[in-house]
Structures are given as C-alpha cells and as structure tokens.
Amino acid sequence: MRLRLPEERPTEPPTGYKIAHPVLSQDGTRAGFTGVSLGGALPYGVLADASCVYGLRHRAPNRRCDCGFHCVHDRAAAEALLCTAEHRTAVLLDVLVLGRYLRFELGFRYARQRVRTATVGACACGAVAAALADAGWGRPGWRALAPSCAGCLRGRTAVSLAGFARLAGEGLRVVARPAAVPVHGVPGLPEELGVPELAAEAALLQARLDWFQSQLARLGQGGPDGGPQGG
Image 1: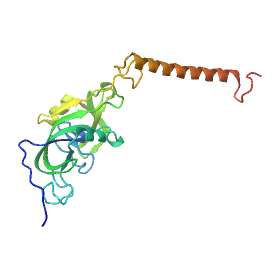
Image 2 (image 1 turned 135 degrees about the vertical axis):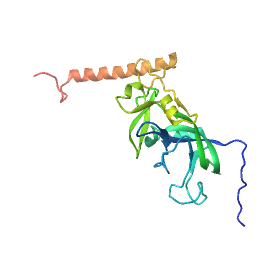
Image 3 (image 1 turned 30 degrees about the horizontal axis):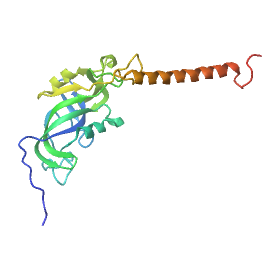
C-alpha cells in the first residue's frame, strides 16, 4: 500500500520568498518578473498561474514533473541566493502561495501566486536604488531591469520603483533595501562607526602611510639596480 501525506487545508494562504529579475515590456506599458532557473524564459505578472514549462498537458504542479512556481519558507535562504554573481541584480519577492501546492522541507511548489512585495537591492555603485534600469539583456518582448541610482542611469531605459509598481498593478509594493553610507568618501566604512572603530581605521591608515614612506625613502637612496643614483 502506498502511503500519502494528508492534504492541508489552511485558513489563510501560505507565504514564501523567492528571487526573480524584474522585466519591462518592449512598449513600456507592462511590468513583471522572470525566474532565475526553471521557467526563466516565461515572464509572469504579479498575479499569475503556473503552466508546465515542458509543454505537457497536465496541471501544475504535477508530482511527476518539476513544473509550477517555486519558493522557500525562509527569507534568509532566498536572500542568500542574491550573493551569487548571476543573481546580484535580482530582486527579493514576498509571495502568497495560492491554489494547489506541494510542500517540501525548504519550501513550496505551487499552481498560483501573488507577489506582495519586491525588495530591490543597491545599485552597482553601492548607492540605494532609485530606479530599475535596462540591464542589457532580456527575453523576447521584455527588457530585464537592474537596480540603479539616479547618477548611474546614463540615458538607459528606466522606470522608477513607484512606476514599476504601478505598471505591474495588483497592489504590488516595491521597496529599496538600504545601503551602507560611505564616510568622507571611504568606501565600505559605515556611518555608524564609533570612536574605537574610527581610531582603529586611523591607525591602519597611518601604518600604511609609514610603509609607503619607507618604500619611498629606500627608492630615493638607490638606483634601479640597487646602487647609488646619479652618474
């Protein structure tokens, strides 16, 4: 006899997290997302139904197939995917799992979803994103977008975060993830550092300066071959 897990009948839709690339239609009138793995060639809207990416006629998700939307239970697990090089410009999605679903240890595979919130990472320069701009690649009829600050747009096709939410519709919220603010033009130095941390940074800079001065002094005492300079 084949044992099956009991069916779940939740009173409220389960929630989950995933990452995706934001996309803008060629005519600039629609916005959506495209996945980062299976089914990535098929952009979807905020409220969307899954279909079998292999073209089979069964309903998604099917137990004997990989079709259907995918998400994980833990937000941190989804954010960890953003660390890989190919996913750096993706956004974090908070989704409602709708319709039929299959539960796994790490998440769900399911038939229908609603994207509630899209969290946009920082611009490539490190500043907080103010817009989503042409990423330089896409799908037929769709431009992939990447986070960008106002200073890095440089004439590219772009849409503000609020504009993307409006084009996507269905009550989507698009928010920017805060970025560390450099202090006195030193990249990577958080603004909230206290006196002990700043003193340590100053000591490190002084040690580097002393090393450079010693190297300059050594070069000043000898020529390229180690002998006295002049002739």
